[in-house]
Image 1 (cartoon, one colour):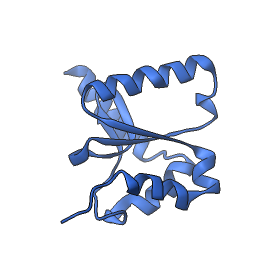
Image 2 (tube, helix red, strand yellow):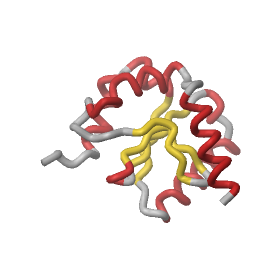
Image 3 (cartoon, one colour):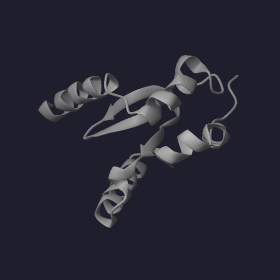
Amino acid sequence: MKQDWQTRQRAHSLRRELTDAERILWSRLKGRQLGGWQFRVQHPVSPYILDFAVVKLKLAIELDGATHSTIEERQGDDRRTASLEQRGWTVLRFWNAEVYDNLDGVLASIEARLPPRA
């Protein structure tokens, strides 16, 4: 359980330190703005912290910047995605540049994965 506590504490810290891309996307996801779904930012799913999540749908949205560009880092992301998918999560990944250059397209891609709210 120590790891879960540490993951939650790290997630809390990360919420105060959003990257520019995360801040931009979060401004359009918070408050049920997209399809009426509740998104969470920096949501812990131990041992990971998801950039954004719709917990009811087990939908994770991950933003990748320059720190995800090497082969080793991409392989780590692939392992992380596979681990989450084994636990029933769907993972959508976008590059930070997509948020900066095509925010509406990113939002449309996310919204396409959301079922309509009743």
